[in-house]
Image (tube, rainbow, N blue to C red):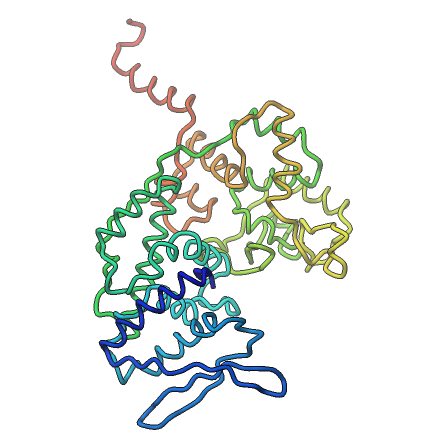
Length: 404
């Protein structure tokens, strides 16, 4: 779980919290370091039902400072005081509430409720943006206008990212409501759109052809699968040979890889089979003949690093390394100067489908979107020649045939 690590900041947070708790009968308890034969531990003493109790928070190797141990105690205190001081919830800091949310809703050792990719993204937003700004404030002090103005000032972030930050904060406050820490959710009143400010980068047909011609077989197969299907990066690198059905010419999308962790795919719609064109099937067969990793449980694009050891075949390549070491240099060598990323190929596929006049439902099915609204709002940009042709068909209708 990402946290604000500076000791002075945490001390300030503790001071703010304790001042508020003193007004709310929310007991502090005491924390001491106690010797044990196996090593010192942190003991937390408190009162419950009129009697004194002591629990071991953890070892001094787990929590190397008293500040770190107190952070762990905060979650314990929430449960201890929930019944005895129900009005104390609003006095907790947003940092403590976020920790409680992470423990209950986003445990990193269990990916059943949320996919690893979702949790990894959420923790990134908390660590880099949300907690540095709001972590020290009491949850009752955070107002919709303040959050709205803060989001408006994050110029380095796309509108979609701001919307995700807003939604994550709202989810954390809903968690507080469910657990009786708050009666309302102020983030519900925060206005934040998700409309793109920049048009996504796409490649045209000639650029894709030039890039494919400049790549080695492995990277060419990756790019062809991505640009020819719109498959997401994590899904592409999560394909195993057992997922490929050469007879039916399709790939079963069963997992998504994020930071080498295999998790669930984004949505139920994402699990639909991905069709394979003849060219894609041919390249996959050629790569199958060349790669040493052919078992059904081997990844199609497995790492060949010497560090892989016994994991050879069972550990996928790192997408960013493939992009930086092989695909971007090949693109530059054929004169492509546009900024490239794996999502560029997904946008390119969607845009070319639209340019070919495919209906929205077909595009939605191929991109495996949960709804056609996402297809229309995010991916249906038309190439300039397609727009010009569409315009010309309208303008020509203004004039009788053969007149000027």
